Length: 207
Image (cartoon, rainbow, N blue to C red):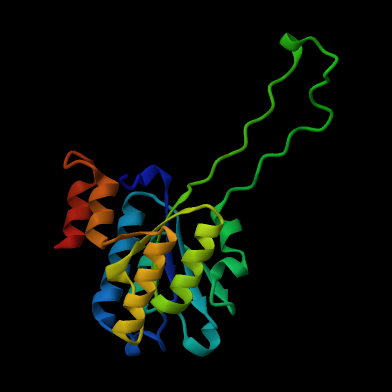
């Protein structure tokens, strides 16, 4: 199964100014988060970001914040470690269309009855990355799996203060059913072909 750009949303978790300096391989992780945001912008995909207690841990890192603004991302500040506990799953799903009141009368002949409106389906594939991998990223991803989203964790855009905690998070996420991918995997699966009109722009971000 490959990622489908038409069914994808990007979620970037807690790349904050007072957290990132102590994160293992923080420069690589942040650079890949910025690449993900820019790719999503180019491909017109929905982008969401979170911050944990922004008054204490600060806003998103400046380079990422610029990419988020360019992608017209929405940021959810939270206190719970899992953003789902703060309503993220509801934000990722579009509102359900309500059936009109006084609609179909069952007494009417079948050919006169209006068909029930279809529910609007959201983009069910969540491409997610963030820090710390074993806390906010993992808890959010596990909760999204519980909410029946397809969750793809971008491993080279995730980390923790220690390598051991990061790797333990990946093991647990894989065991729970998340797909583990890299930034380049995401890029080329979203594109699918070198003939994609945005291929050159996306490829330039990976150099």
